[in-house]
Image (cartoon, rainbow, N blue to C red; front, side):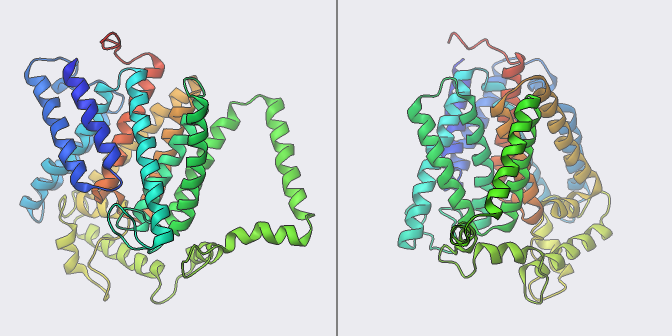
Length: 423
């Protein structure tokens, strides 16, 4: 169908330019949405309420929309909330449903994955140029920890911890990948891991560890008992070997943690600072900002102060010099803006998503789906330390990954429509 092909092209352009162009995201996303709506105007039926594709998340998403709409009705600034509801939330939900609807064949799925790879190659080159020459060639951003074309290193880290597990899952597929593509992906993953280290984003490191542990758990879970025992003995052997290594070799290995990538601290120091709370430190600032968000929630507990209004409401709750700004915590900001109803509705969406994903993984050994689930889990963990759901690039990435994961599961379970395979 021509509508779906055109929507696919625009969505691929969105994911390609996502790391470096907010204008590109908007420029390509709105035509995709327009075509998606036009498709319905011409009478195309998908077979569910409002002609939306049927997924296991529809009920949860409906509850989520109702909850955030209540926050609009009782908002401290209805104009801002309406703008956020129609210009942001519904747009992001459209990304999810468009992907589920149009990614109905393996060929289309592979096309999206190749675009992810192409975008990652470009951003990796950009990060390298930024490191060696002090400025990236896409946006002209100067080096301030590794951030490539992102405005912050935390934003770059959030993107990295999503795409690295994705590529690992892509690599694990094996079938249909040429040797050259496997080699490129392997090198790319190594370079992206180096970029992640160089971001010095502690929340990103934490999220990545959570995502990778989740991935390893499922891989380990599906192995035969004999293989599990061999891996266990191998791991214990590596640990024992490290303990008895000559001091010089041990020093070289542990020196990895002392890399500073031209930053002001080493990796080891950055890790240790994760639990440090000191006057003027970023951890204390975050705690105070979280406290402001909770004070807003106390005054607007059920439906919040209103979708898209945190930036103006928070000014009245400023408690210290650096306060009155976004709380650097996606969940606390969501709680303040949409109340308990909004946050619990969103958590219900996540619960429904992972329940569907885990059920699928228990039935099928699909490493690509595992990579997607791991990347999303890493993103969600990192979101506890930053406002990812309020950054255009990152929230689009989240809903894109959510929709693509559901499309993969539908393809793998045979639930996706295959009516376009012959087109």
